[in-house]
Amino acid sequence: MTAFSLPTQDQIHSIPSAHTLKGNLLSYEFPSGFAERLAHEHSWTLPFTLEVLREYRRFLVLAATCGQSVTPSKAVDAAWHEHLTHTRDYWLRLIPLLPAPLHHDPSGGSTTESAHFAQQYLGTLELYHAEFGQPDAQIWPNPRLPISLSPTPRPIKRRLSRWLLLAAVWLLGGLALYQFGIWAVAGLALLGVVVAAQLSSPRKRRGGSGGDGNGGSGFFGLLGDLGSSNNSTGDSSCGDNSGDSGNCDSGGDAGGSSDGGGSCGSGCGGGCSS
Image 1 (tube, one colour):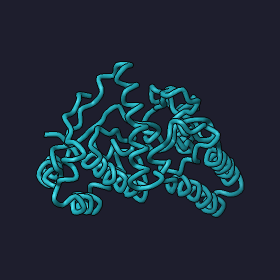
Image 2 (cartoon, helix red, strand yellow):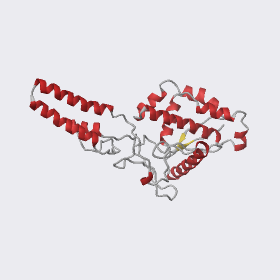
Image 3 (cartoon, one colour):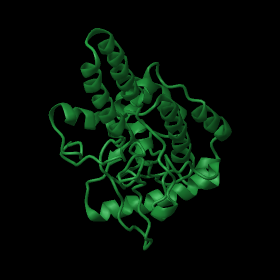
Image 4 (tube, rainbow, N blue to C red):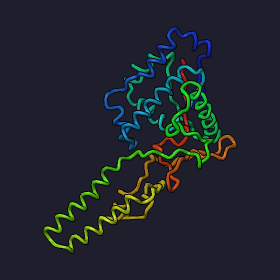
């Protein structure tokens, strides 16, 4: 992430309509289909996606008014990335509202840069708290928070299709009883038990190679996929950034990341600069 030449606090306060700037950003309307596409790409529910967009708007306020570079959470950064792909909306509608262009330059990946952005993320959380109050820990997780105190991740992926599959199994069981007798029903009942067990099994974390973590293949591997509740868009965790024993990876029953990609601060930052 390159350094920014940011406006000073005096310059910020000299903006004639700073209150209007904040209001315009907090009420910013994204292009049609923006939220739906973001939800689809990250396997989020639409309500959760709308919450992420609310937090992205607040991040824009911080970037435009705090007078220093800020680092978003992973979920907010995902919304920022998506917005950048809508180039006309980002550059022709959003940027004119800001005191200066807001650029996004990713980290080079070095240890020094990672530590810098991890620390900057903590600073962003403090700025957020001062401006908006306590941040939503599901979208702005605190890496200083011990795992035992981490909030329970809310479900991101829809499970409707899995329960529909189970309902279909029992429906087929009724039809089989009518057509073929008790043995066909017994087979379908066994299948229903397997599906139900998968639906109620603990969540498992997928490996980096894209495996389902269950070692299954073929038909029963498919059932494993249907029963798995892995909701992350990729494995991610933060190291010890400030001497704390906290871990950013707010895991589920099996310790996996399941907060929709918001487990720690992203490797980027931003601030309005000319």
